[in-house]
Length: 257
Ligand code: HXC
Image 1: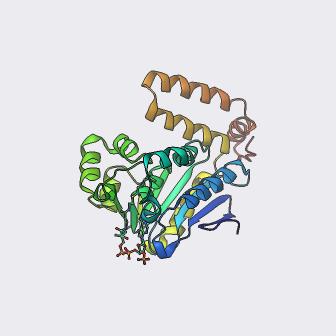
Image 2 (image 1 turned 90 degrees about the vertical axis):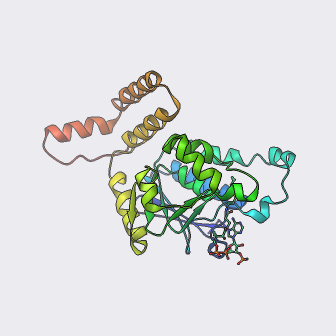
Image 3 (image 1 turned 180 degrees about the vertical axis):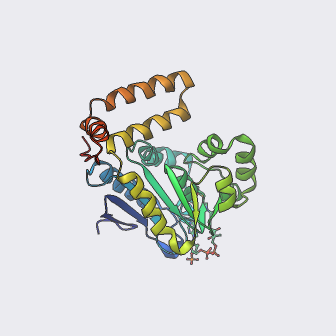
């Protein structure tokens, strides 16, 4: 393919991205992150793709940022590199991203998982922020996203100690949507993706957009934002088709317009 560290494909309206450095437990080097973002961007603009599914080849989802690559950085090189602009682009994607994770989901790998909209995890998944043990801290949203998700108490405990969180704990805290048997991870993730892929795509993206605003906005601002998105959907052909089909007691035929 056109990528060195990931593998992509499209099937059944699902855009697949597999991290593909299995010998390094899918440690994320910068080229790899740029490739992920570029693949996600391409899928976001491809009308054949309704949902994006992100997983990893080999044993683990990802053991985090590539430590060898990071080890000689300094503040000036990091500022000039501006690597986090790539990560920021992930949050601008309109289509839902489902992460299918297993084994190690560490550091930048955990941050990548937290950048997904929905997460399915194998029983054997372990989430952790080990950055503190390296003398640093999460830098791609970990301290912010995890805290907004689980609250300050547990976020601080986990990030300060690097403690590994198992799949059941992650489910209890609302970090993941579902736990599945490791051998069924892709099958279950595809089933999950298909449930979204059959929905009218404009409604799907407006829902994702509105729910994400609840994280950043006040309730009042969020309500206004939701309302505008609700109104916009009434300009779509799929709204007309969806409601007409209900009245005519038949299945809707959505076009994505
Ligand atoms: C570079 C890594 C790596 C990483 C694993 N490898 N994680 N290389 N960066 N993050 C490499 C190992 O060096 C080894 O290469 C091979 O992958 C297999 O790993 P092992 O350690 O032999 O496997 P195992 O004994 O099963 O231990 C798994 C592990 C451990 C517990 C996940 O690899 C580990 O602790 N990795 C580092 C985890 C970490 O600290 N991540 C956070 C990084 S900081 P060789 O060549 O020896 O076979 C971060 C900051 C993000 O993510 C900031 C924003 C971008």
